[in-house]
Image (cartoon, rainbow, N blue to C red; front, side, top):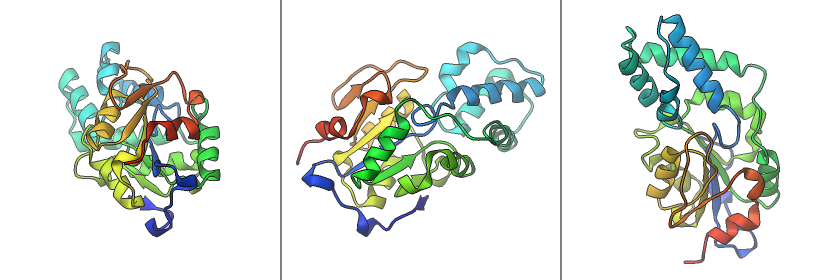
Length: 232
């Protein structure tokens, strides 16, 4: 985990009940979910295996160890999990070497939250080496904290990454809004007790108590996020 500002500087703007906003990375802020699948297809092709397109929804949004392990089992590929995760990360870094495309509305949302001094955390199941590369496109100055999937004992769908983010910025989980694009990420945020905005990428997500589903980040702004969090 990295932190760019001390938690003591965290404050809630304009007396809002909203204390912080946590955002997923792949498929939420940056349009990279398709990149990951392309990389997985290419790596397994090199290993002599063809991936079934139906597996794409199964491996999206979770920790790499889970998705890579599933693909090894599904294909019968003769490769150890650590070696495969290294290959996938290497190939993905090559894929994003010249930057990544941001999702519609992402830049505007980050700029608005920063202008109002709303503490933000980037919370991803991707490994630290990938997050640090993507941050060049997002702007590391926007985030008080970044949490990587290989820095917590249990990553998404467990609540640990979001609980760590809340502790790091000195916020109550129930007063934090989370923006996620996959069922795995939504499950993690809800298990942590956060309010959730789901922006589905590949797999559908249904509305539920404490969860709002929108079509894109262009529908999300500070007023919208504040409306999700009520005072205790």
